[in-house]
Length: 65
Picture 1: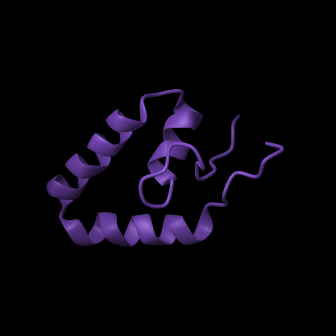
Picture 2: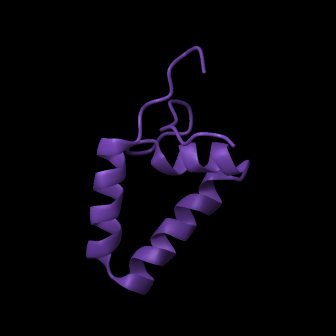
Picture 3: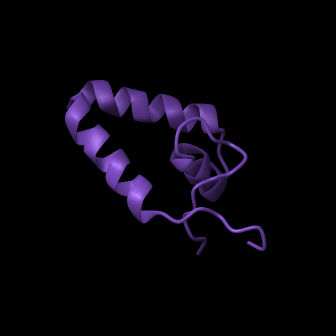
């Protein structure tokens, strides 16, 4: 099982979508589009709060990992 890290390479804002894409071996653009779709489908506030909490909790990927 792989761990979730924020990405340093695929980073637009915090690197969460890029890190999730690296973990799932998917295209980061598709993950970002999924987050935007979820934002519009559920409302901006729940996704924004979830993103901010994940930004605070998920560690940045260290160079040796």
